[in-house]
Image (cartoon, rainbow, N blue to C red; front, side):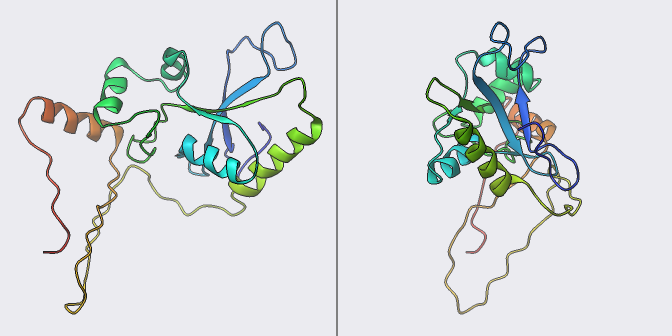
Amino acid sequence: MSALTHANGVPVCRIYKDPEAIYGDAKTQGATVAFNVQDSLVMPIAYSDVEKLADEHNIYLRSSGLCNPGGIATFQNFTASDVKAIFALGHRYSKPLTPELLGGKMPGVVRVSLGAMSTFSDVDTFLAFMSEQYVEKYQPIERSPTVLEPVHLLRPANLPCIYHPPQIRLSWKSLQVALSRRANKSCSLRLKPACV
């Protein structure tokens, strides 16, 4: 997994383990690998999406938070206020928010485990799946995942209005500021339909 890279050299997987652990040494590392998948611009792909796509390919893995949320906080460099902000936004492990809405942060992981009945073929199948589904073969167009450009919706007059909530990307800092203002009741967040 650690050898999988996008065309620009960015690793496909961000693997989490204790710095002292050594894969292959049963005394320091077990048979479970915890990781997140990321695109070539280092934006994480939602762990629930990785699990869903793996299920569709008959590959069974687990995704969500961990029994030790401190592990996620440590590997993602979360502060206590980061964790509070994530849950204040409505994130739940059963209904995770997308990394774009969380400023590129990922409060959960994908876990793949080997057991007594696992074979080399199982490992090869998983690695082929990761390569086929997530390795970007071409150089990406540079973009900033935290910058929101205004989008103007145009609608011909003869078409009915169908409201689709906008997808808004905020930087992690902007998100924290918005939440703190809302908590202080100095402003309120309102959404209105794109067409009336």
